[in-house]
Image (tube, one colour):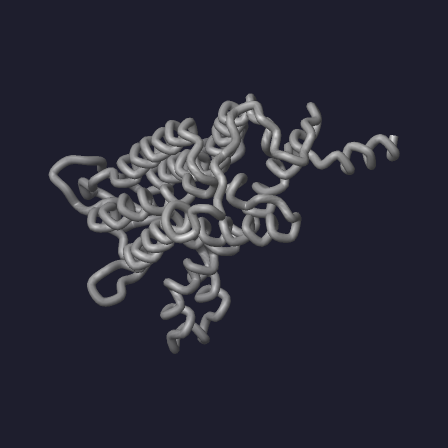
Length: 293
């Protein structure tokens, strides 16, 4: 559709532009959702995305490589190793990025000794918002396209994904982008209910798993591969659905006394003090800063 734009003679990827816009609007959403809260640390709210980005990138690349492993292991692959390796690592899979980012955030929070569930819920609405911009980028690039249909969009001269050219296809990328925005709005509204910590991430897993499972039936690309009668992403959707349901059961049925509800807006956690520059911190941290000055 519009994979690249020219700016002052420089060729810029529209997918990259969409990713950039996704980052900007994600930051705005975090600010709006947390500007009156006093239960988190400002430094951690900036550190976590940096580590998540690295984990998401590795996870997205790794899962794509796994789905293209047959190309890499084929007999002809060894005749042109560099080309085959580039082909096997040339894309990304969202689910790999999702689980890679969440796992990295969990490890970071454990090492930093901070509440993973608290920060998971802060970022839960951001995931579908950022993903929506990513899907718009897919639409611009011509990847992740929909099935042939009686209505939709027609690509011309699309060299990144030649099969999409001159065929009317369902704009499944834009449909999923809209559904992601709806998921984001649902999570933002539910956040006002002060659910038990970690519930928003669990609900995201459940809702998106259902959306993605259905979405896959309308995808026209088969690059992600199939196993038995379902696509790779549909099998992963089932796993995500089970994980989300289990997370909710732990919080409201199995270990309901273990998980606390989010503090009311403006309250500071017990044992912490609020610092206008750092957010919720331990009293000892304030003393250390004072000594450093």
